[in-house]
Amino acid sequence: MATYKKRGGKNKSAQQAPEQDSVTAEVFTTLDTSAGRAEAWVARYQNYILTGIGAIVVIVLAYLAYMSFVLKPLNEESTNAMAQAQSYFKQGMQDPTVQDSLFVLALEGDGVAPGFVEIIENYGRSDAGQLATYNAGMISLQQGDFDQAIAYLDNFSTADPLLGALALGGIGDAFTELNQLEDALGYYQKAASFAENNLTTPRFLLKGAQVALAVDKNSVALDLLENLKENYASAPEASKVAVLSAQAKN
Image (cartoon, rainbow, N blue to C red):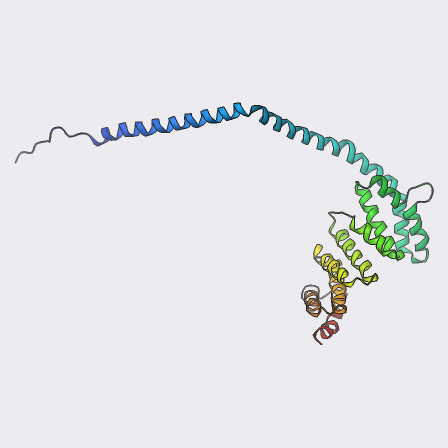
């Protein structure tokens, strides 16, 4: 039986081609429109854009210039100026028999080399100025000038984890001596968590627990003692956990 092809039938791909051309044209038209708008926006705000870029460049260059021509020489100059005061401070820490006189020289200078107080006044922004602030705070703590110790140590800023923890702990010690135990507890907790390590963390966990017991915050004391027991069992401070925990529970 013969078969015949139906006349008038259109090829499917031939139908799709105009549709695809239409969609493609629409896409390019949209892209052209968007590009035109972007160009118009850039043209409209060109002065603001260039001003912003220029400001950023100026800020970056100013920062680099400050680091190279101001801060670096300042650090070198202040470090050299503080060498003698730092030597007095270290000697005083090592020899308690002459500590008082050496600490006075470290703080006030010896008539030739400046002391920490002068270093702080002249080079407070430098690394050496910040170290002088820490040292002055610790000397004030040793001398019993607790308010002054807090003032110095509170102004001390460092990225060094040990010094940062010791400074916070020093403030806690000063508040303890002033019988401001709530404040002391807060600083001991900050010092313990500032940079967890086997040197400073056990010390301030223990001090924090002792102060917490003194202000009847037994649950806080138990948390600090549990941390000390679990994470720093080999530290000398851990030997006091059992007795203090018993006190906190009773």
